[in-house]
Image (cartoon, rainbow, N blue to C red):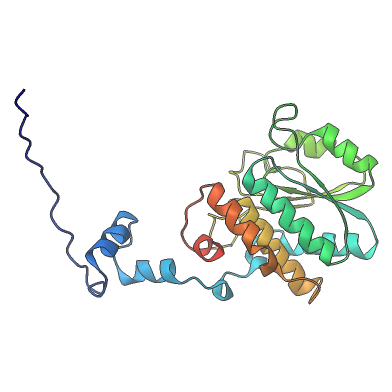
Amino acid sequence: MKKERRNWILPEPLRAQPGLEAFSTVFRQVLHGRGLTTPAHLEPWLRLDLAGAPDPFLLKDMAVACELVKEAVDEGHRIAIYGDYDADGVTACASLARGLSAAGADVITYIPNRFSEGYGLNLEALRDLHSRGARLVIACDCGTNSVAVAEGRPAGMKLIVADHHEIGEQRPPVDALINPKQPDCSYPFDGLAACGVAYKLLVALERVAFPGRFDPAGSLDLIALGTVADVVPLLGENRALV
């Protein structure tokens, strides 16, 4: 059988953009595929320095969340970290539990069963946590759209949500919602995974509530894992976290 002859049509070689001539053709092709075609686009992509990361207090409700956590620790109230069953939710939960435990908090964790409970906050779990003494719950990677559950939570239970999901029509009635995607949030980067939001909460807490009691960078291994596993864009602050 005679083989069919094929003529390959190759794209024109990528020409070096002004200011990028020093990079190899292969690297410029990678940059081009990511939409990074000028030095101005490239600079933040290459800058892997968390020291220059945005102030965590640009996140709406961050100051309120720090006050609630400090109050709970100072008064000896138990704090429950409510995660999610995926890698992002688990690493967010673990990093917060690690940091708050080092700060002297009485911490318990909760990961819902994927099959019997499904995604997000549920009332039975919050009632169980309340019966175990939790007076403050920090929900990671869930809670942004749990309006009914937040409304029906046990009396006296404070609720902080550290999440990154899109906001629905109604804001949940929680004590603090830390989510860069919410309206009126001045944080300049909305691509963080939930574990990235949890990291920003740790940075803020160490700064104003528990200085010197723990190092937020000690959880960067978990934050990197959750960020990659959740397939958020590896741009901006996410590249520095990873």
